[in-house]
Image (cartoon, rainbow, N blue to C red; front, side):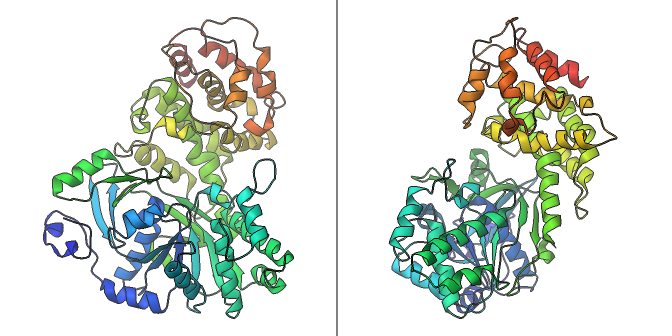
Length: 533
């Protein structure tokens, strides 16, 4: 069983329970090549396991007759070592919470190129961007991919260089993308939707800001017509917001072994020079959500027939806030911090821990739901039900608390601070009734000490404020009974917690919990039990 056009002709695929596509892929390729409608940038697992499969669903239903052209602007080895090697095919392995597995071959990617100045690739992208049929370009390039400046507000050197050298010599992906959009402008100011599908707040705003900034710099230096900036600001070009939610972890060794047992030969995991982990197969959870602002000047694929929600910008924003501030991300962060302290290496196993289940249920249902942002199109309680009962406990999901604990200082304010603010602003709620959210804050301070509940040292996950946080607990060890006044600076830091914990009246409780957790080995568990009951 080899994942190639020729290999799919073997009857073994169906005999082993693999679902193959039924459409004429060569005809799909020809139609897509002559009249493209969709280009996607960011060739990684989330795209292969979600948007590419959505388009396949439309093609199978007879609701679409063209596929997706893929570009990769960061890691070209993905194209050469995965797409080209496997004829642009993907094996999607869906890992269900009930223990069952679906195995499906996705064939809707019809062309894939690096987005650079390689003659064939660049000529093809220019041709595609000039096509009147093109409806949308989409992105899964991670939030960092949209950043033009460093934390100090200075342009990264690559962009400084691009601004000076101009089109045709750009080193950064977004600069080259702006060039391609300029070619669409020069072809007659053709309409287009520029759709970020990255998991970050206000993603459409981020891609719009990046592209318009690059364009403005090149217009200012005379490399491009001023009309290009006007075109980007017009109704001919849209930058819809979206919310995406689907876990597609790195290729998992246990999944590879299951596939090998079937006779599937292409299980090798590629680790590129840029540290991308990718394989011919994508392992993913079953649950998925994609909500998109319905603003497409040149039309769009009928993805609502594949489960995508199309709505207005305000509703997209509400869905994102519901997920990030209440129904998913806060629960994940709580499990990450406590999981590291309590010696867990899989999030799913934490959901067999009665105390941790009580913790996340209290954060979600008791403390979060009273102030949840309800988007209307998705029920918040049902969303939490699915998270708690299906998604997080899924034994097939190889997600670790250590990975999720990365950059926790950047997450606390949005994942918990917004709930605290809502309590403080409500005449009917008492912010001091919150117990488990302050417990997570205390556990994070305990976590940055780098000592688990057994008293063993561990390395906290990467975090831009790790040194700052560790300095705040410097000199504090297990059994410490001295003053904790040194915590004042960090607990009043609104950038971390979203609020000054002293001003809202929660600092004393966080300090009380923290003191309890540092009493002795086993104190984290004892404090957790005491608080969750």
